[in-house]
Image 1 (cartoon, protein in one colour):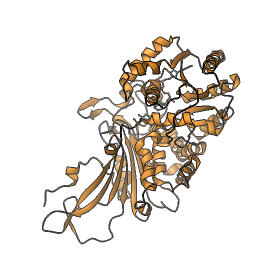
Image 2 (cartoon, rainbow, N blue to C red; image 1 turned 135 degrees about the horizontal axis):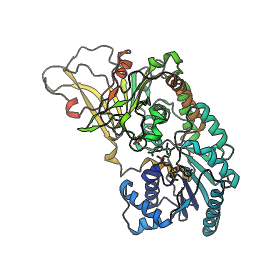
Image 3 (cartoon, rainbow, N blue to C red; image 1 turned 90 degrees about the vertical axis):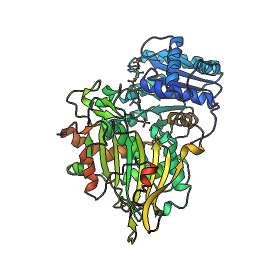
Image 4 (tube, rainbow, N blue to C red; image 1 turned 180 degrees about the vertical axis):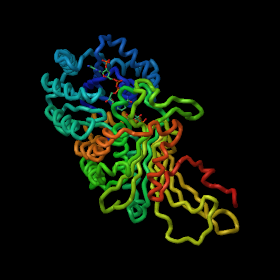
Length: 509
Ligand SMILES: NC(=O)C1=CN([C@@H]2O[C@H](COP(=O)(O)OP(=O)(O)OC[C@H]3O[C@@H](n4cnc5c(N)ncnc54)[C@H](OP(=O)(O)O)[C@@H]3O)[C@@H](O)[C@H]2O)C=CC1
Ligand SMILES: O=C1O[C@H](COP(=O)(O)O)[C@@H](O)[C@H](O)[C@H]1O
């Protein structure tokens, strides 16, 4: 959210510096920030992993990955070489206290070279089970002794349920104050997610319509074409509810449903988002099947390519009951949204990659018009988050011709048409963390409320195995039960795959 350039000397310590996230997202983000002139003159990245490696070998590994994953690519040009010279590798075993002593020596060495104590940013890109050990070792050795200078970024998932998240937070708070803790949800760094705030509160004409008075229902989709790829071992113990709903989808729900913040300060925005999470209607164990559908993909075809089922993927048990799909109906018990369903769905191996929010408005109370073969289509506002980055307003117009008959049409704002190449989500978030702006990070109460909203579901699923897994084909839009979830309300999932030509169907003019 902030545009400033980092001025203070800074040391970034990446736990999990050799991992998948670091190679695909973190190093490319730092490289792009560097090339954009957003890093300070004096900075050092210390990447940690268990094996012994030389700086040279590690830098070649980073360069190779920049070539594959960075938006500005990583050619071996002088600027990228300069960036690489700011990276050091350090061998550290998280469980061994002596490793932290040598890390401390290394950090002090850079402080000396900088001529002052640098700010420290600890990036925990490791499995959550290591967080407590790292945090207590950081405290023991005094690595983060200055609350004004030192921060920590924690990757998701923050805990596995509400109880473990509370324990984790208590443990962390023995070393770091809340204002030093940056809990990342990379969806909040996406341009189009931030644009929801701009769209809603930077305009006057949509907000009066933004309530139960005019909206029929809201549909939030985060669909992926990919399966679990190389992360089967991690995903098996997690599943779509914890991997996607607890964080990304509930954060998008917050942006869509929140009240206007008093200001753009981090706490004003986060207070209004926390209100949404608090207002999510908690469901009873016996209601879980009524409100939530889980699914797991079977073998199928995506864009003409055959793909295996989840149970055949690498690292997955052949009788796994981990869900790769979740659809749920959420009610918000507050004045603005009482009685309006929010349908959330997410899944891997879906027909196409698509993250979107669809606001369906109530139908007109009465109409004397005739309609084309699609019939009357309610007004819709479609906010496409990715890969399309646009906002569409769908409404009815007169069909060209002699009769007064209507057909749907749309107006489109394309985010790309007015922006230069957007920064990646991780660039925005890391820049904010370096500068100390926590607006786009999750405050503790948000995390706790989000777990509270889904804990009952997890508990019920732990004790009742799904009877019909796998229950959707790779390349589809999920299990049939997800259609029934909406049909009970007289609603349907809106496909959001129509082209403009299909929408403007002229066949019966
Ligand atoms: N990958 C992704 O797309 C995403 C990941 N995340 C989150 O990011 C975090 C990291 O994920 P990811 O990068 O995929 O995980 P990986 O399994 O790829 O990497 C794990 C990292 O942890 C290090 N590690 C493991 N054990 C130790 C130890 N005892 N001492 C020191 N280092 C150790 C490994 O280093 P080494 O083996 O070299 O010692 C490696 O760098 C997780 O919390 C994940 O949920 C969040 C969103 C997306
Ligand atoms: O956090 C995660 O997000 C990715 C999807 O992120 P996107 O930016 O590519 O939409 C998901 O694949 C992964 O399982 C999850 O951990």
